[in-house]
Image 1 (cartoon, helix red, strand yellow):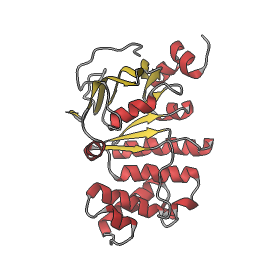
Image 2 (image 1 turned 30 degrees about the vertical axis):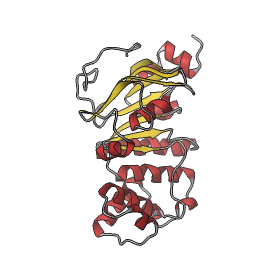
Image 3 (image 1 turned 135 degrees about the vertical axis):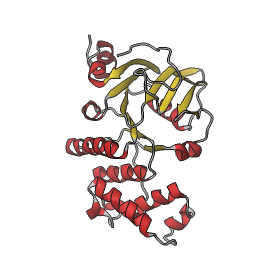
Length: 269
């Protein structure tokens, strides 16, 4: 486990493998206030990685810098061997970024199947999305096949024709996850995916994430407050506190660290 910023070879992970995502020295200020100070994080292909920290630690700001929604004042973001620090959001998506949101983002009035078909169309860019939303375009056998495969993978085939507003929050979270995976991302950024879920739904989500990551080879960067979910899903953790990375390493090592427990878990040690 590391507990302080370290110098790293660009594009390489601490274990020597090539990084899919390599963010180095990310600094972001707002009106003179430093939200992030020289934050570094890496994710290898197919790896499940967690980013945790107390409220206000800078997790969302860091996510936004990775996605291109915010531009860092210093540092760089490399993805799949390419410097993407100055790329706009849509170009990062085309390179293989996917994401879900802390606040559920779905299309009211569309069925579960239509959510997946819409995402598939967005990836392939065959027709304007407004035609899909107005239901004016025909679905091909290939599109239906890919959407059916995602329904099967998520175990929600019986919900294919259900309108999204008729589903529970837990099922809607699965639909949002499936929609993100329909774009076949190389890296999936998950922002508080267990928000609003009960314990049973959270356990089911953890199982789905592990299995889908294994089967698809998609790397995952998980921002999450639910430590049980984090422990079940990720192999490595990075910990932010007041905009500074205070620890990183194997999940159990980091969660047992005294500084992490004091900052995040509430143990006064």
